Length: 259
Image (cartoon, rainbow, N blue to C red):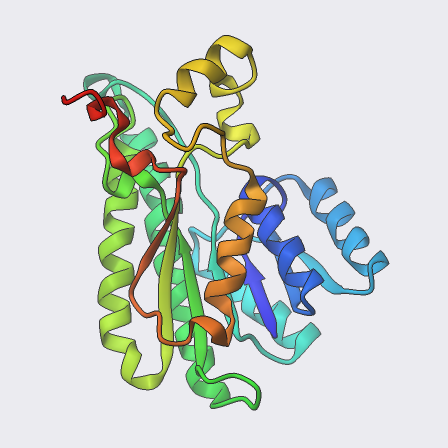
């Protein structure tokens, strides 16, 4: 199993990459910044007997995506799985949001996913079937509960994830006859640095927990385990599905008392 994980130097991407490596996958660890973190993670994986190579690339650019696939070909001989995890936030009230804030989020969260997924499909086709896998290739998008839940003050982010939902589903519909499986994971509140302000203090965590019926904040490893399942043959009949890993956030807990 050979995988590319974008945005792998921290948070959910880091947890996914480590989980894949510990299950025997050779992993390209993509990062845009955070080179030291990516290199330390690669060293950790190698120390545990795994295979990993860190690769700097901007996935919002075609050249960046090409760099990743050249690296996985050079080091591991091909690719079987893409986990398109890289994402950013540039928050602002709608009327105050700049065009640059809008474009940056759409380019990374949606266009970058399109570019990397397109390159993956072309590689899968060129490689052909591989012994040991029922699928020709697997693509996992890292979406968000905000592909379904509106998010005031974050319209660029919500729009990018809403677009990602239909990108994934349309790709899955088109590519399933070739046995290319495309799915997504939609995390809810996960304990990562990007949302540290939402859980770092006791008061902030208590407020956040009001949105989570299950009563705890998610950990990156919760998402990593879901990604592992979607990447293996145990989920071979799962196509075009978004797996929500959110502790029930999508259940709109504010309506528990009758709305």
